[in-house]
Image (tube, rainbow, N blue to C red):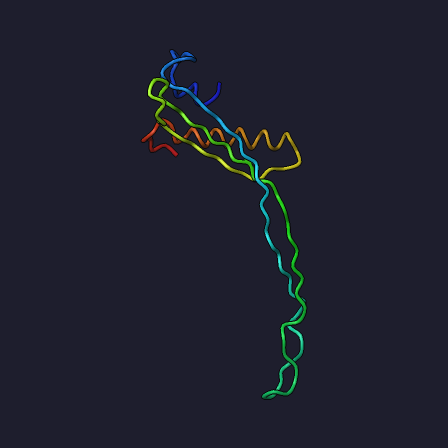
Amino acid sequence: MPPWQLKAGPGWIPGGDVSIVAMEITQNQQTLNTFYDGFGGGWGWRRFGGGGFGEATTTTETYKVGTLVVDLFDTKTKKLLWRGTSSDTLSNNSDKNIKNLDKGVEKLFKQFPPGSSKK
């Protein structure tokens, strides 16, 4: 049974006083990796001799990050009651992404209901 149903209690029925809105956002992120090939030159005396830092190669790595946002609203007043978010790097393996999503939802709802101190 999903974690939100467990915490809502056995008498919870959809269409009640709280509305749930869930959004998934996917973004490309980049990281730069710089590798240095030695430090070049050698020790010199004053302005003579070698110097410098050798060669550097920088590569760009692009990866996807998925974020799940869950909002709980008061159905009558439309006021936000609670918001939970969970983010993780996405894989090319859909089974792995599904497992990570399940873990993310479980972690997200550990902070529910509002004001709970469970971790």
